[in-house]
Image 1 (tube, rainbow, N blue to C red):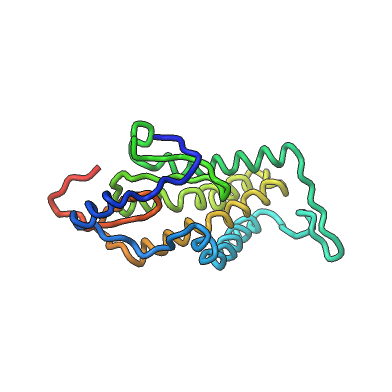
Image 2: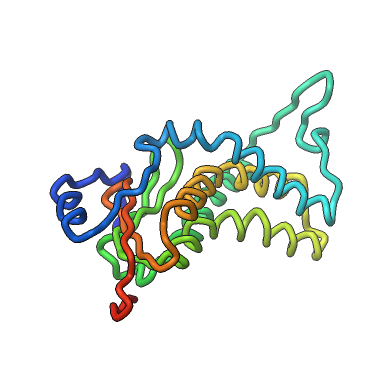
Length: 209
């Protein structure tokens, strides 16, 4: 695993090599800003799903987040900033830990940009595992966590806010998930060339990790 402070760029020579070997480029947004814009409807859907899970155990209202009909009151303090940073780290860790051999991989990158954190791997990964890597932060933090915290009676307004924020921040992940489900066959493996994703069918007798 390598630490970076910017997104790795695509390698044109690697692109040509992948095409020659039968890899198919996915049809996906070429820029992060474009992906964010396309994922805005999914942001709302993800937030509603997370709110629905929270509502099983606890009431939830705009008032507890400082939003009322006549005013907006937002309190930003050191603990909240710390929790936001921790949320960002946890989100990326839940992507990272499902990448096979991520610790020893020299094709896996972890980093932080102005748009948030990122995890990119150029390892060859089966579709089912790739889907798990893509959706893990949303399922873990915004679905499973509120279920567990709700059963324990620990859903505070601050935690509710962070859970919903993570759901909204997972919208690009959900967009990627939908693109994979639509374009990539069941028996396929995926890899990346910088921010771009490729897939190809698995040979019946091919051994994969």
